[in-house]
Image (cartoon, rainbow, N blue to C red; front, side):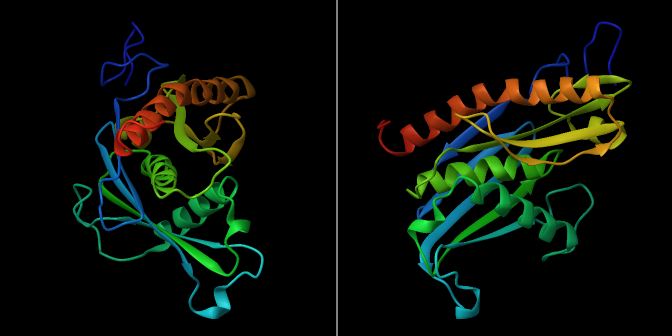
Length: 233
Protein backbone atom coordinates (compact mmCIF):
# COMPACT_ATOMS: atom_id res chain seq x y z
CA UNK A 1 0.00 0.00 0.00
CA UNK A 2 3.07 2.22 0.36
CA UNK A 3 6.42 1.48 -1.27
CA UNK A 4 10.00 1.80 -0.02
CA UNK A 5 10.15 5.36 -1.35
CA UNK A 6 7.10 6.40 0.67
CA UNK A 7 4.81 6.54 -2.37
CA UNK A 8 1.22 5.41 -1.90
CA UNK A 9 -0.89 3.39 -4.34
CA UNK A 10 -2.35 6.55 -5.89
CA UNK A 11 1.04 8.27 -6.25
CA UNK A 12 0.79 10.56 -3.23
CA UNK A 13 3.32 10.93 -0.45
CA UNK A 14 2.30 10.46 3.18
CA UNK A 15 1.30 14.08 3.76
CA UNK A 16 -0.63 14.74 0.54
CA UNK A 17 -4.39 15.13 0.26
CA UNK A 18 -6.31 13.95 -2.78
CA UNK A 19 -7.22 16.43 -5.54
CA UNK A 20 -10.14 18.62 -4.45
CA UNK A 21 -12.62 20.63 -6.54
CA UNK A 22 -15.34 22.83 -5.03
CA UNK A 23 -18.19 24.70 -6.67
CA UNK A 24 -20.96 26.76 -5.06
CA UNK A 25 -24.42 27.71 -6.30
CA UNK A 26 -24.87 24.54 -8.33
CA UNK A 27 -28.60 24.04 -7.57
CA UNK A 28 -30.60 27.14 -8.57
CA UNK A 29 -33.78 26.12 -6.72
CA UNK A 30 -31.96 25.73 -3.38
CA UNK A 31 -31.21 28.67 -1.08
CA UNK A 32 -27.59 27.55 -1.10
CA UNK A 33 -25.69 24.64 -2.61
CA UNK A 34 -22.25 23.21 -3.20
CA UNK A 35 -20.52 20.45 -5.09
CA UNK A 36 -17.36 18.83 -3.75
CA UNK A 37 -15.22 16.38 -5.70
CA UNK A 38 -12.61 14.98 -3.33
CA UNK A 39 -10.52 12.29 -4.95
CA UNK A 40 -13.25 10.27 -6.63
CA UNK A 41 -15.85 11.21 -4.00
CA UNK A 42 -18.59 13.31 -5.59
CA UNK A 43 -20.91 15.03 -3.12
CA UNK A 44 -23.71 17.58 -3.53
CA UNK A 45 -25.11 19.62 -0.63
CA UNK A 46 -28.22 21.81 -0.70
CA UNK A 47 -29.56 24.17 1.96
CA UNK A 48 -33.18 25.29 2.33
CA UNK A 49 -34.29 27.92 4.82
CA UNK A 50 -34.48 29.31 7.35
CA UNK A 51 -38.13 28.27 7.32
CA UNK A 52 -40.80 27.75 9.94
CA UNK A 53 -40.12 24.49 11.77
CA UNK A 54 -42.78 21.81 11.26
CA UNK A 55 -44.08 19.89 13.05
CA UNK A 56 -44.23 22.39 15.89
CA UNK A 57 -42.91 19.85 18.40
CA UNK A 58 -39.42 20.13 16.84
CA UNK A 59 -39.31 23.92 17.32
CA UNK A 60 -36.74 25.46 19.65
CA UNK A 61 -37.93 28.71 21.20
CA UNK A 62 -34.46 30.26 21.30
CA UNK A 63 -32.83 28.98 18.11
CA UNK A 64 -33.22 27.27 14.78
CA UNK A 65 -33.11 23.52 14.31
CA UNK A 66 -30.43 22.28 11.91
CA UNK A 67 -32.02 19.36 10.07
CA UNK A 68 -29.28 17.41 8.25
CA UNK A 69 -29.92 14.44 6.00
CA UNK A 70 -26.93 12.54 4.60
CA UNK A 71 -27.67 9.96 1.94
CA UNK A 72 -25.62 7.76 -0.37
CA UNK A 73 -27.19 7.22 -3.78
CA UNK A 74 -27.80 3.54 -4.62
CA UNK A 75 -25.33 3.84 -7.51
CA UNK A 76 -22.61 5.59 -5.46
CA UNK A 77 -20.61 2.40 -4.84
CA UNK A 78 -19.74 -0.68 -6.88
CA UNK A 79 -22.12 -2.68 -4.68
CA UNK A 80 -25.61 -1.30 -5.26
CA UNK A 81 -27.09 0.00 -2.02
CA UNK A 82 -30.68 -0.15 -0.84
CA UNK A 83 -32.24 3.29 -1.28
CA UNK A 84 -33.32 5.26 1.76
CA UNK A 85 -32.06 6.07 5.22
CA UNK A 86 -30.15 3.45 7.20
CA UNK A 87 -28.32 3.36 10.52
CA UNK A 88 -25.08 4.69 9.02
CA UNK A 89 -26.90 7.56 7.29
CA UNK A 90 -28.59 8.55 10.54
CA UNK A 91 -25.31 8.46 12.47
CA UNK A 92 -23.49 10.60 9.89
CA UNK A 93 -26.43 13.01 9.68
CA UNK A 94 -26.29 13.43 13.47
CA UNK A 95 -22.54 14.06 13.72
CA UNK A 96 -22.69 16.42 10.73
CA UNK A 97 -25.46 18.47 12.36
CA UNK A 98 -23.54 18.59 15.64
CA UNK A 99 -20.39 19.81 13.85
CA UNK A 100 -22.22 22.52 11.90
CA UNK A 101 -24.26 23.69 14.90
CA UNK A 102 -21.03 24.91 16.49
CA UNK A 103 -20.58 27.56 13.77
CA UNK A 104 -24.11 28.39 12.56
CA UNK A 105 -25.72 31.31 14.43
CA UNK A 106 -28.94 29.41 15.04
CA UNK A 107 -30.00 31.87 17.77
CA UNK A 108 -30.82 34.41 15.05
CA UNK A 109 -33.71 32.23 13.84
CA UNK A 110 -35.83 31.04 16.79
CA UNK A 111 -38.59 28.51 16.07
CA UNK A 112 -37.13 27.97 12.59
CA UNK A 113 -35.53 25.14 10.69
CA UNK A 114 -32.56 25.08 8.31
CA UNK A 115 -32.60 21.97 6.16
CA UNK A 116 -29.32 20.57 4.83
CA UNK A 117 -29.45 17.78 2.26
CA UNK A 118 -26.21 15.91 1.48
CA UNK A 119 -26.21 13.45 -1.41
CA UNK A 120 -23.21 11.24 -2.16
CA UNK A 121 -23.18 10.51 -5.90
CA UNK A 122 -19.85 8.66 -5.99
CA UNK A 123 -18.20 7.21 -2.89
CA UNK A 124 -14.53 6.42 -2.41
CA UNK A 125 -13.49 7.04 1.20
CA UNK A 126 -14.15 9.92 3.56
CA UNK A 127 -17.67 10.69 2.33
CA UNK A 128 -18.72 12.08 5.71
CA UNK A 129 -15.74 14.46 5.57
CA UNK A 130 -16.60 15.58 2.03
CA UNK A 131 -20.24 15.95 3.10
CA UNK A 132 -19.41 18.20 6.06
CA UNK A 133 -17.19 20.35 3.86
CA UNK A 134 -19.84 20.60 1.13
CA UNK A 135 -22.56 21.46 3.66
CA UNK A 136 -20.42 24.24 5.11
CA UNK A 137 -19.99 25.81 1.66
CA UNK A 138 -23.71 25.42 0.92
CA UNK A 139 -24.65 27.17 4.18
CA UNK A 140 -22.34 30.06 3.32
CA UNK A 141 -23.79 30.17 -0.20
CA UNK A 142 -27.27 30.44 1.34
CA UNK A 143 -26.16 33.47 3.34
CA UNK A 144 -26.65 31.72 6.68
CA UNK A 145 -24.62 33.65 9.30
CA UNK A 146 -21.74 31.56 10.64
CA UNK A 147 -18.76 32.24 12.86
CA UNK A 148 -16.54 30.06 10.66
CA UNK A 149 -16.62 27.33 8.03
CA UNK A 150 -15.91 23.69 8.81
CA UNK A 151 -13.50 21.52 6.82
CA UNK A 152 -13.28 17.80 7.45
CA UNK A 153 -10.51 15.36 6.56
CA UNK A 154 -9.44 11.90 7.77
CA UNK A 155 -5.87 10.72 8.18
CA UNK A 156 -4.91 7.24 9.33
CA UNK A 157 -2.38 4.42 9.43
CA UNK A 158 -1.40 1.92 6.75
CA UNK A 159 1.51 -0.52 6.90
CA UNK A 160 2.52 1.07 10.18
CA UNK A 161 2.84 4.52 8.57
CA UNK A 162 0.55 7.49 9.26
CA UNK A 163 -0.78 9.07 6.06
CA UNK A 164 -3.04 11.99 5.22
CA UNK A 165 -6.51 11.72 3.65
CA UNK A 166 -7.11 7.99 3.26
CA UNK A 167 -8.31 6.69 -0.10
CA UNK A 168 -10.59 3.67 -0.54
CA UNK A 169 -7.89 0.98 -0.43
CA UNK A 170 -6.21 2.59 2.57
CA UNK A 171 -9.53 2.97 4.36
CA UNK A 172 -10.47 -0.66 3.72
CA UNK A 173 -7.15 -2.23 4.66
CA UNK A 174 -5.56 0.33 6.98
CA UNK A 175 -5.15 -0.12 10.71
CA UNK A 176 -6.77 3.13 11.90
CA UNK A 177 -8.37 6.36 10.78
CA UNK A 178 -8.95 9.73 12.43
CA UNK A 179 -11.63 11.92 10.79
CA UNK A 180 -11.76 15.47 12.14
CA UNK A 181 -13.85 18.58 11.54
CA UNK A 182 -11.84 21.78 11.89
CA UNK A 183 -12.88 25.44 11.79
CA UNK A 184 -11.08 27.02 8.85
CA UNK A 185 -10.10 30.32 10.51
CA UNK A 186 -9.83 29.55 14.21
CA UNK A 187 -8.51 25.99 13.93
CA UNK A 188 -11.04 24.88 16.56
CA UNK A 189 -11.97 21.20 16.56
CA UNK A 190 -15.72 20.55 16.18
CA UNK A 191 -15.76 16.87 15.22
CA UNK A 192 -13.47 13.91 15.92
CA UNK A 193 -13.85 10.17 15.63
CA UNK A 194 -11.26 7.39 15.74
CA UNK A 195 -11.45 3.84 14.46
CA UNK A 196 -8.56 1.50 15.25
CA UNK A 197 -5.47 2.02 17.38
CA UNK A 198 -2.95 4.84 17.19
CA UNK A 199 -0.05 5.45 19.55
CA UNK A 200 0.18 8.96 21.03
CA UNK A 201 2.87 9.79 18.47
CA UNK A 202 0.79 8.40 15.59
CA UNK A 203 -2.28 10.27 16.81
CA UNK A 204 -0.30 13.52 16.87
CA UNK A 205 0.98 12.92 13.33
CA UNK A 206 -2.55 12.22 12.03
CA UNK A 207 -3.79 15.33 13.87
CA UNK A 208 -1.03 17.43 12.32
CA UNK A 209 -1.75 16.13 8.81
CA UNK A 210 -5.44 16.99 9.19
CA UNK A 211 -4.67 20.47 10.51
CA UNK A 212 -2.19 21.14 7.70
CA UNK A 213 -4.75 20.09 5.08
CA UNK A 214 -7.40 22.70 5.84
CA UNK A 215 -5.56 25.72 4.44
CA UNK A 216 -5.60 24.71 0.75
CA UNK A 217 -9.19 23.46 1.03
CA UNK A 218 -10.31 26.72 2.66
CA UNK A 219 -8.86 28.66 -0.27
CA UNK A 220 -10.92 26.53 -2.67
CA UNK A 221 -14.07 27.17 -0.60
CA UNK A 222 -13.53 30.93 -0.71
CA UNK A 223 -12.82 30.86 -4.46
CA UNK A 224 -15.99 28.85 -5.09
CA UNK A 225 -18.15 31.26 -3.08
CA UNK A 226 -16.61 34.31 -4.75
CA UNK A 227 -17.23 32.84 -8.20
CA UNK A 228 -20.83 31.96 -7.33
CA UNK A 229 -21.41 35.52 -6.15
CA UNK A 230 -19.96 37.23 -9.19
CA UNK A 231 -16.45 37.63 -7.85
CA UNK A 232 -17.46 39.39 -4.64
CA UNK A 233 -15.48 38.43 -1.55
